[in-house]
Length: 548
Image: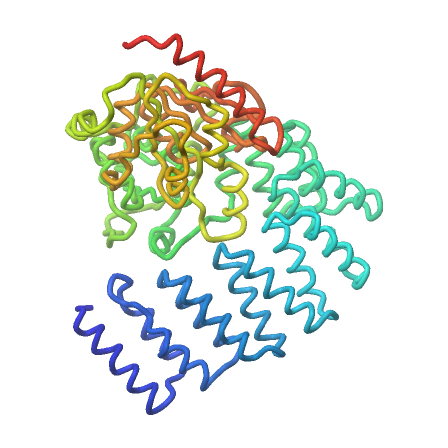
């Protein structure tokens, strides 16, 4: 929609609101039809609309609309203002709390709203339970446990659900030992159920005892063969154990993560393991994170080698990198219209190892890099980087996405730059930041050693790849840049959280996924001990470094 049309629509909407109340649903429907590139939701218009038709449902809808347009601060401001003007309305307060808790990262605000809700209605069970959950997410563990204990005292009839929440959130917050203790207590009191056994298995897998976890997942599935949570956990644990032949087949049964940008692609018939793909046209699309796409896209060439015509649909940040790397494979942006009529099948990119019939670790090995940087970009960044060698790239935090599960996973893997630098100490090398996102702001406070930051000139993963080709070592937490370094066959040291991702297995410094990667494994929730190990290894590496 042209910009002038958008402005005229907004002006008309303001006039309409002043003269007559448009229905909230109608306003949102009209707003959702406009391009994100042009529309900025007018706070006063929507506040006026709510004042004339204020319900918890409409408050949630309007707040959601602001968040969908990227105006998160304005959306939070609006719901807080409405709650403040209706201080005794419990349902309105809960609607605001649920919105903030599940659609933003402002867990401090969610906790404040839920405290208010429990004061208004201490007899409402779900408000108390949500407050306890939100406190755990906020990392207020002691108070969270107090709230869980209060909930058990006030609502003994909900004991089973309260214990289930406590176990799940302890696991997701990085406390698998504590979760396991609670689960075993409940198991002794109430006996086995599919979900309880699933929780036990999940906690044990997070403690890197995957063979034991497999047997408990199997018990859960014996009680309920259709339990989706246990089926997915069983498949992921098979993969963590290196049982790739069965694991990837079972992994294909996971519930897919479909977004508005991949909905049409996911509607195509899906290729399944063992299916003959010769002569078929298949478009493979991103279904999980950027790191997963970087990790699994290598197998698109295997599918092409079996006679399929393969295309890749990926986020814009990966498009140029994949076009440089995969000759003979058409690449599309997921933000563009893809000619779906040309394809027989769609395939989530994480399905590719199973479709390629990966059975052993040997099947994962790639002799050389499978991703390529543009030589012109490599040369461009070569003259921008400091001349001093060796050069070491740093990535200390992952992308923090806006939902609780991803937020907690990111918190378990990310490190503060201050703590990383304290562990590394001054090193005889040029340090180069490869960090993007809000954690990049930490560079301003880092005074231990100069860190060169070229990321203003980085517009996509192809640019990052070009910088990596000018580095001698990349030091990264478990995020997409670690996968990029491994796929480029650059030397990379990865600092793994203690409840390691399934692809890194339970133990060991190496991985068949990336022969140039060395894994430093945290043995506890705190990163300080493993960072001390990394610091010692890096100082020795710098001392012994020789130009190649």
